[in-house]
Image (tube, rainbow, N blue to C red; front, top):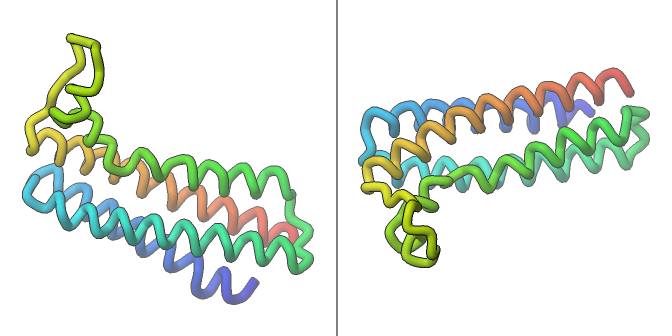
Amino acid sequence: MGVYSGVILPLVLVVSGVLALVGLMTLFLPRLHRVLGIATAATYAAVAVHLVAVIVVLATGNAAGLVLTLGYLLASVALLPLLGIGRLGTPEAAAGDADPDRPVLAPDQIARVDGGAAVVIAITLAVLAWRVLEILEAGA
């Protein structure tokens, strides 16, 4: 539990903070969209490490509520596909859909959509990680 609260949780919080900051910067400077892609990859890695660490803590005898903890972990993983949601507005994605009303976004609009989504997801991931910590501490 000490490694989780001393290393893993701060890692997730720092990565979430960086993702939120880069997302905000991308809203105003769309050319930073590539940097947001790097922050997105780091977020995927941090969530994967978090997932493995919590499962290890649960497997080593923590008496935390299993269903609630796994629910928060599942929510963390379920958010990840929303990073990069702007890809649905690319001309290639619109060409693959028969709906004539499907919007096609310009590159700067795609960057701004991705930036806004990154901010929301970063805040949500930080809250979910905090809730998992609270549950694990209660079960310790």
